[in-house]
Amino acid sequence: MNIVVFVKQVPDTNDVKWTENNNIDRTNMESVINPADRQALEAALILKDRYGATISAIAMGPAKAVEVLKEAIAMGVDDAFLLCDSKFAGSDTCATSKVLAAAVKEKLPQTDLILFGQTAIDGETGQTGPSTATRLGLTSISNVIEIIEINEKSIIVNTETEKEKITLKTELPCALCINNYVFKPRVPRINGYIKAQDYDYKSYNIYDLNLTTDDAGVKGSPTYVSKVFKNKEGRNCKLLNYEDEGCIESLKKEILEQ
Amino acid sequence: MEPNGILIYGELNEDLNVHNVVLELLTKARELKTKIWNQRIMVCIIGKRMNYEPIIQELGNHGANDVVLITDDRLAEYNNNYYGEIFTQIAKKYPPRIILIGATNQGKEIASYTATKLETGLTADCTNLDIGENNLLLSTRPTFGGQLTADILCKTFPQMATVQANTFKATTCENYVNAIFNWIDIDKIENHIEIINKIKKSQNAKDINTAQVIVCGGAGACKDNGFTLIYQLAQKLNGAVAGTREAFEKGYITKSQQIGQTGKTVAPKLYIAVGISGANQHLAGIKNSDKIIAINNDKNAPIFEHADVGIVGDLFKVLPDLIDNIDK
Image (cartoon, rainbow over all chains, first blue to last red; front, side, top):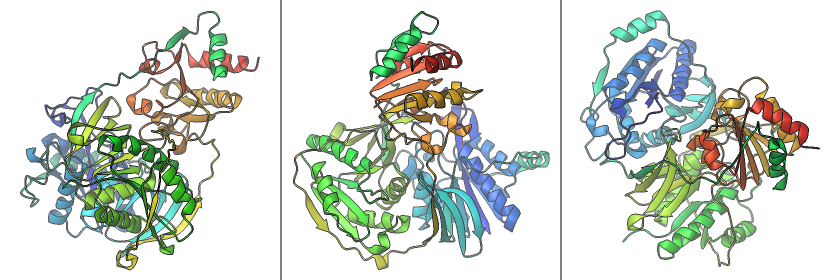
């Protein structure tokens, strides 16, 4: 069984920097692996432990995004490569899904299962996984909380919506978006770190993926940020100090007034 | 020629009533359409065969000009393969300028599928919608963990956005509605999903979507007996308990009690924020509350700028004191 896990580099700092085009400046930030993607890696590793599998981790981003691939290798994935090209910079969900789909199509066409984290903590759109699957003509299942069974042809999973827990079966290949909280990611062992240090991380550019400059980056993105601003539409706050006399009485009045 | 009209996904609840987010989107669409030469508003309903007359009327009363229905007993339950493809086919048949979808579990899946099939952009979990330059849809959403807010435009048609329930207020209007029964060859849609079992989750907690009073705990309450105090206060006020993302991640609340961009948007009469600093991510989910009271020990916490009443003090002292006094 061949599994692909997409992992994203997300900023670790509260100090976000922006490029002139109002896109996130990913070259000048501390990178960590997106927490939900770590859960997806764990889900893949559980399948490998249980059934045997070859897992490839793929990240898209600047050269330093290789850091998240190192972590994936340390955790136990078999191969990891980077989709890296300045022409990818500024891609929105639509363009990103084109690049990710092309990576599977061109480099790992024998993939049985693709795993994504449900959402990324920076963009939080939750669309990249379903969109990539749609481009590959695959069914995508959201909010997966448990993988019950898998064989060559199909997979049975538990998913969760706001009101229901649903068990469903779908054919392989398919894509799963792994819930952000249920799979506890393993801590890499020392030999994992050693392998990660020595590993030869391949990197593919836009031409390696058989894409044109119209497909990715700012050019390939239908949406664009026209303005970024800090929220200032506040309310006029009546501020009381707990230490002051009568504070609780005033608070009680405010509560019961409504 | 540019495409015309606003298409809304008419999600139905399990009880086969219209999801409130649809009525909220219709109300917003009425405002948007006046800014783009009164284009028509269409709602697309997908479901089993039954009498849709009351639903059509309700949609009409909220501003739908056309309601297009695709009904088949195989569509009794939501299935991404069917619903995504059917909605896409409707969007192709009546090419709209704007598509609005509620950011529910199924709405998000349908939106992703449709946007990809139509090769267009999609802005998720918008906190406001307007018409911007060149009559394009201007979608506003918090970005980057909610530290900032971004205005997003889309250069392709249709321009798509998803919006959480309770972001807009639903109102009715005088309107004439037209029903269109459509037929789509469902046999031609490939279905790869088989639903084996469904279990309704037990809803122990009071529903924060409809609660009039909400007491919400943040990082500051995620220690000692913080949430016990919050539950006690909520009980006294006959209110619901909610929490921030951190409270959910630490296990103090369930996902259905989480407020904020990755949780729910609420609109109660009274919202009490306890130990919440006030990231945009969270503020986006509470700004429609009538009255906001914040309790925090840091007088510089951003939450105070978004509250009507602020108490600067240690929640572990303020709450017991308040709980003791509330009945007196």
